[in-house]
Image 1 (cartoon, one colour):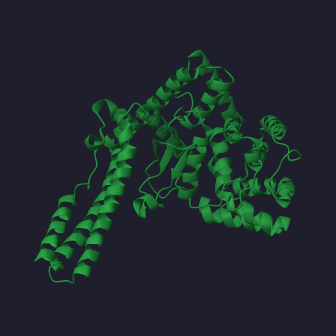
Image 2: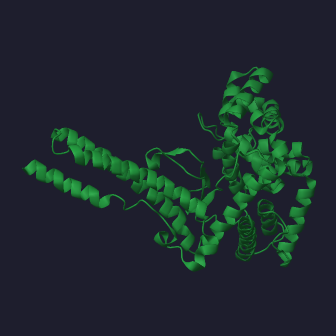
Image 3: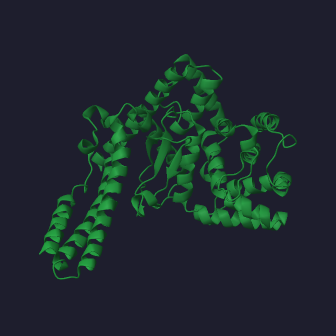
Length: 427
């Protein structure tokens, strides 16, 4: 009798928790009417709710199976079955918590900055769709940005299983922005969007195999082929960021990577990130290939002045000595060689960037400095670079610049939403 009473009490507790976290909406995360312009789309809420509903369905099934057998089964089996229900409830709690943290930030003072970064990320995808129509099989939920502690931005790709969710797949890309990096002129943000582009374009494996094969053939050095193969995802994101934002993105990445020499010159075995000293030289090579030799030479001269291997290096001699030959091969392979999953086009074909784009960025930076910038002057991804020039070269005060650019990006976003809604109504 005591055992049955205990099991009954456990069942009551489990039943009370079922369905508690099965749905999320604007009200539940604190999005008020005045926050609506910065809220994620209805499709994002629907995707989150489909994930929560699937977990809730699994939990309910487990509970009903437990309820049907718990008074006849051996007590140890009952405890196992209870643990299985608890596991599903834990998944629901973790998934709900993630969505609550991410979506609930749109009801805070950070909402305009987050929505502005959403606009930048969406425009990066739009750039690919414009240059390569039908490259994506259909509509894709755009990345959603949120703020969290951490030194640098980071991303969780679409569909990747998350340990914090006990293996649940991520329904849409999430891009983390550190609390103090909410200003919309950070080139590292373009790098994080590029990671999502690479995943959604389906060229992870193709790029990796191509880099390893090319370096093995050209350099006859398995060690360098292995290392650059391990670095291929980060190199792709760096090169794509330059194609999304131009030379300003290369300078922004260099500023992000500029640390004391012991860190910049230290090779980390097994790391997915290139050693910072070599990483910026890869950016220099990309600028040369894109035709921005002036920017490339200034960046190379600055970087080799800051970091001289003759003074300090903790990079394996073979890797350092071989960089002059390896880097041009890697840049050519990742950015300029065609890929089957890109319909036999190269990265530079689906993310074109040229001198005309750079001139538009420079002109927009001047308009930002004189207060004459207007929505529509530049696509959001290029406005990131214009803002960085306005900050560094034109001397615009950061608070003023941040407000101006955030407003422009949100106006662009709202105009696009309005056009989309009008098109749906007409259809």
